[in-house]
Image 1 (cartoon, helix red, strand yellow):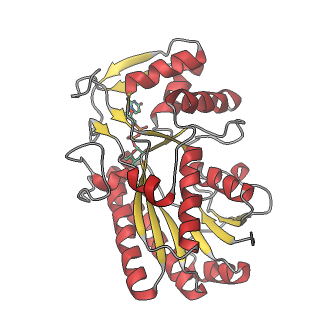
Image 2 (cartoon, rainbow, N blue to C red):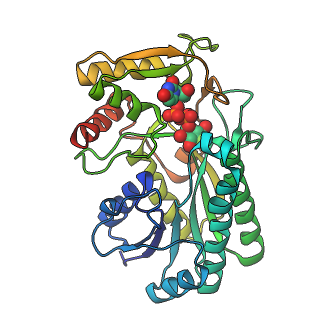
Length: 325
Ligand code: UFG
């Protein structure tokens, strides 16, 4: 197979770095653009990183021309729902304006395909689970709204400039590389699994955000998807676009949900220790249950989750957390 030249924005971050690794394993020629505001230099193999901002349209255009980029995988963006409720402007600037700058550069450099990191947050509080791609788009925070805005822009860039895109709406990305080399490290950390692991390692309790939801054990249910299965979805989406596939949107989740207490029990099993936790009140904006309908991704792109059993996710996250404690 001929080497395809792929530009990955946000490739120093959590999901981006796992995808870069998989792209390299599959023989792609990869360049990473990351301003390192939330990503880490050590996540990117030597020689691949261009430490710059996607807002730098002119430089980005020149870079893509020089590299003869064929497609972009666009991860760069802020991801914290809570932060977006406090500082919405940062989310619209970074996620929307940043993406627009990237699209302008792609237009100038004549790059015609993009895989975009979207989110289950585009659905807000869905009326039912599993959530299908046809459900109403009604985000309830600026983070989700920023992703909707980019999805909308991508629709227009296709209609007007024939730039094709796949929007992958992620559910709860989790886990890490089986060799412990890559994993989840956000600062500050707000995600459940790393916080539970930290509680085990430090002895300081994690707070469970509410046990009065209408779920079997009263705690929130989420669809945890192993980051390597998520990375695989990006490769399939990329191959689909490079083969001439039309623009589309897909949920990326397993179709199975786990409650917060089930995750805590899984960590106790893997770590062989009790998880110190306290029962707290609900976190504002948390829906009771978010589970993906992912039949479309399976049927159309042939995706199959391979590592997303909860125990496997927790094992890989634990291996990484212990290594980096
Ligand atoms: N939770 C706790 N205690 C914590 C942290 C989380 O009980 O200290 C609970 C939350 O209430 C939620 C579950 O664990 O029920 C998962 O919470 P996360 O913060 O790990 O993830 P979210 O489901 O809130 O958010 C994820 C992504 C977002 C995305 C959203 C889509 O991280 O980027 O799904 O709905 F927007």
